[in-house]
Image 1 (cartoon, rainbow, N blue to C red):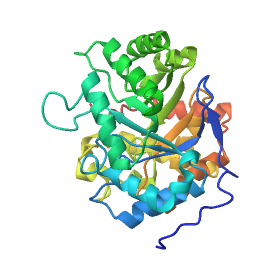
Image 2: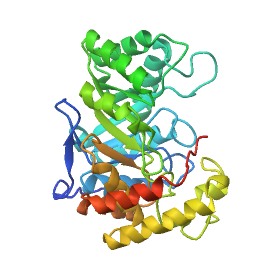
Image 3: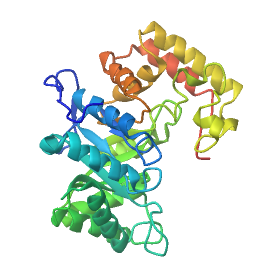
Image 4: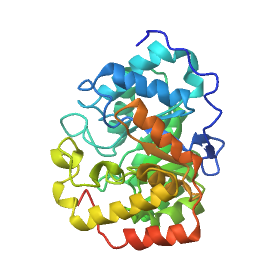
Length: 338
């Protein structure tokens, strides 16, 4: 791989950009998540090629968190290195996000939602990435033991200090989201967006959260659109030996039932009729809803990324197609986190 990357002059030609709620910020319909495949344990050149392909394809939003790796923190370091090597002249064309909420370091101040933890974590993240600020900083999860007012005041302080341009929340319930929106509005730092898990097989956000987000004027970013790879051609014939389910790290083999495999096969047939892969159809299905600002995808190769981006070539569905999809996905239960 060459040391100096010449970015594509056509990088904005084919990407679709959506307004993030009622804000002035536009996000690409497809964003890149760096949860896995970007840590010290991974091949640097492969990670670099993925990020180059993403930017050259019009992906401007790069989604990180303090604990992404492995090991924790290494995804931010790797991303920072690639940013300096390839994209230092293009920082203002990027939306870089990070989060804090899950366990990052030992002791009583290394997780959850205290003011001390959130501010300290962001300072560490900025140092790892070599940045003066991030574009979006999220509270990664609701803290039941810390007053939500304290967490939101920390986000307000972070934005006012210039360490982040916008504040967001992730994995909050509808009720928790309503309260966060109200507090941040009163503080004068509106909540920009909510990020949560959403796929054909995991539709919990449809039970109130999307309505709260829409009425609150927030953007919504979906992660795990392929249900950790289940909504792809990986499991059509069972559990591959090199898959997440086989490793039982985040996806237990017991979740890949014969009933689920049957549904995936039928969904795959429908996708082929649409001229798409199952993964492309799964991404398109999310983007059909105007409340979904962007879909975060995680990939292990540049070719996989390019294939997923092709979902944008057809994000419209007929009523009959939607009925068939819902008839299939409502027949199975899928909850990878129990």
